[in-house]
Length: 253
Image (tube, rainbow, N blue to C red; front, side, top):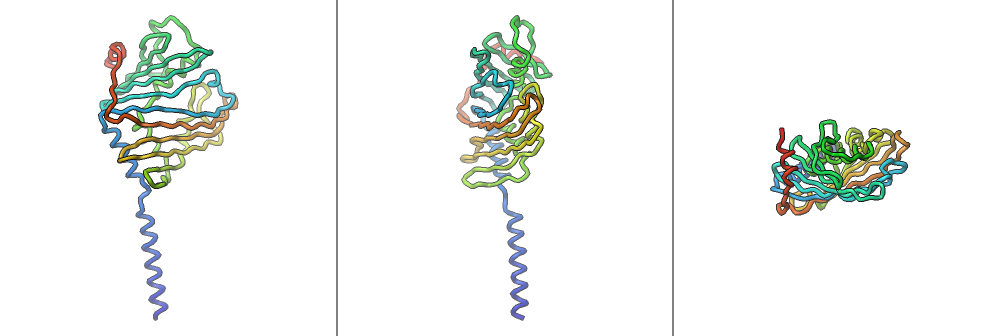
């Protein structure tokens, strides 16, 4: 009888243990709340730094510095970065709100970014190589505010690991890796794709996140090994002011 009671008790304990494991949160809801809280802030700034070991990549022809961005709760966003192209420094600035986007560089004033991801050359007399022109337009056309990008990354993580102390991580799905792999002509990373994402939360707000991408592309046999880190700063203490021409372009339906 005693053995039977022990067996039943053991079965109950195992079942309770399994139920406890099933109920244990993976931190996904906490991370969602931290992203949402950042999005509800009046404003914030961020920086994007990409460390890459891409080999035989046409992008070896230039280098891009950190992207610095600033955004408001209403969606108005400004960003800028410096690129080295043909041994010359080119300043790139971009601005957007909703579906309207505009950019300017060292060589020309603000121009609208078109729906196909390129920019209008009306009023611009100079020329850029097609690849470089498509790249700078791509940077602005595909820029996302950290809250938007972090939400998209989280959706593509099947198993999120709670590392403790506000740190969460997980492997990314193939869909996310395909989107991250696009870097201009040549399409996305198509072979041996692997990637992961990591998030840091502090005082209930998303503070930093990073994602990695490794794989190969058919285009020029590019080998990709890239880590991109996004850090959020000046929450509630960021001013977003645009030049008049940029404002006009963002207010034109």
